[in-house]
Length: 503
Image (cartoon, rainbow, N blue to C red; front, side, top):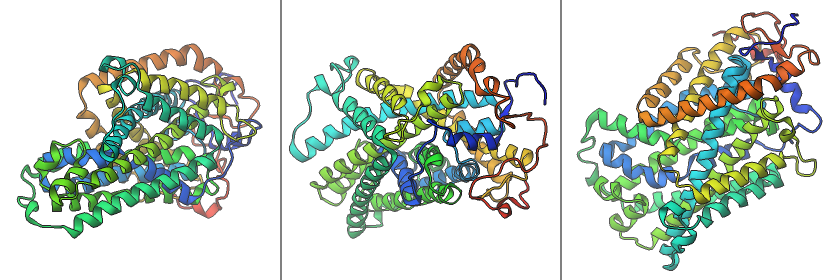
């Protein structure tokens, strides 16, 4: 082995990634099963998207918005399959960051990790602000009362600070510190509540269903369907958060693929039924101008005005579970980067009482709560979209690369027809990224430039690839070599699971 320090494109050996999850003080508790993981996916996906975006989609595509939901689901499915393969093969916290480290090298891993910090952090803050708005809508619909602007809006919006947004972030922070078992239980309850609210809507809509609103079906043609799908696509984002729980899954090789793909299927079924029901009782014109299109559909279409309170409550619960799962995902990605030495390693210390990275979680919670309370996020939330799509690109590429460089590695789940399906996943993501405003690209590039500067000044020097290469055999691998066969066994996987695995 060369005595030279690994370069910026050195990849992490999968065996070392898995081994370090058992390190004293750095190991997370394996306490999550397939039901809780699936609920995490549903909890992250179903939020304001279905309660709001359906109106915008219907305004663009008309009744054909039903097809837009299907098309958006198909676009996500290709990336979901790639996430499922890598999550089951590399059951380590970090999601796309860790997968990139094992396939594309440290610099690429840092870039995607830095990207995900922004994506998840801004997302949590933005969702928390939306939570406050929906809480006000629920209070108004149910009790005829709204919180004063002074404590429900940011300073630039005429308020002092956004108390509801601050509250929900700190409450979720406390829950995440307490433990992953408690967190997934609470999320499961919230998922049941919001699915019940959607079932209520679907049942009422089909009980008052009519076909008149479905003509003309596609007034804007194919272009309308695809344009609406580009907007609706972001109502599906969240299934990738399941992969951040890889290290805490009891049986990751079995449960993670089921949870990632299963949550996407469940949400697609609910989305399509909700869209059909909404068009069956209300016209696209009625819904497109409403901030609460489902409540509008029930009120103006079915004549059930009291249902607005139920839908508003469903939105509050839905958004709360999204905050929980997305914030959980950010803490695990940040934890993985700290454990690898690219961020301060002391932040990756796991609290022995709760089994969670408590110090890291509290620090992130305080920062995000301040952001949510004082800053109007506006168009910066579009950074969430570009960050997610960038992660999708790298995860799909990661499957292709790892199939070639590690054909012998056990794969409990394999993407069928690789590399065709991962390439299609890359194409879908790039297409949607190209449709984003240029201002979003500028912000994204600036953020990555700052990240690369931090990597050069701190991450490169403190990375465990350079500080501990001799202490762990196989710690780093030359990406240009396909040697070292059979060095990456996945725990709990038999040798047959990787046999015949060809790209």
